[in-house]
Image (cartoon, rainbow, N blue to C red; front, side, top):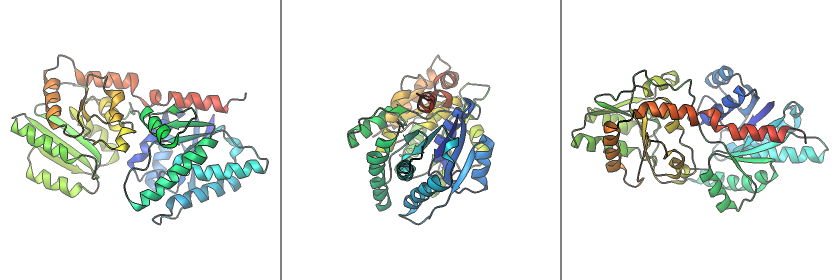
Length: 379
């Protein structure tokens, strides 16, 4: 099977590429050949796609505020109508950000009597930020669901929480399938020893944006220090709050801020720790999301302290996953740390075992693969 995957993700430039790469990698392991149609990429992005052995069709765009998605969709439509040989593809996956361009092209091609491959409309996340540009993106999001999704042969969303949101917001009736996040079990591996360290090692990494509840990591450290618990917190990543965390690292001996570290160094840095932190507040992106970091922590043999956003619900059944109220999680996190330290179970080992059994990209993409086979097979 060969599929065309249309996305607005700029490979090599964003951490948000791993949903596409993880899912596509799992599909490739099942024998699916994948070409990405996405914005032009630099050497880093090209290296990543070559490493995965994915094809790439570059897409021109205007990187002017307010025009990016318009130019992307317009150029997608032109490429699909005039340059891309659609006959070589058994199916197409198209994300909501690029779906209006595909929908326009396929509609025009069908009017000309030309055949088009079946396609899956994909939504991994709605617009998140509050700004004028996001308001424009929200209009595009609504149009994508009202127009493109209703024209697709199948519809795929990240998790049941996102499905509920869509059905309530747009009164959408068509059947949906789910394709959540997963962990790359070969990239994220645990240390040989699963014993807890002394001092206890806690970790968070990712985008250092406001609105992610990140200052509560420092609040947790202050309270742990007050309770005479031996610990160290490590944080790495980049974003607007980098300066704040650099200042905190100079203020507290127990806090280590690494800034942005090389991509290849991330797994080894994670598996030197005992507990991964997910301090997310109760907001739409986290209620309809799939916590990729939690799965990577588990694959690396870490316990996880999280909050009660809806995205946490599928993981609450695991012994190594601890949920606290998103409004004020610190005290319950500390109680969870006591439970981790006193547990008779090897929770770090159990986290890896559960990741292998239930949280891999292969497991996450099973329903999507089944759907691709279904829509691409002749009646």
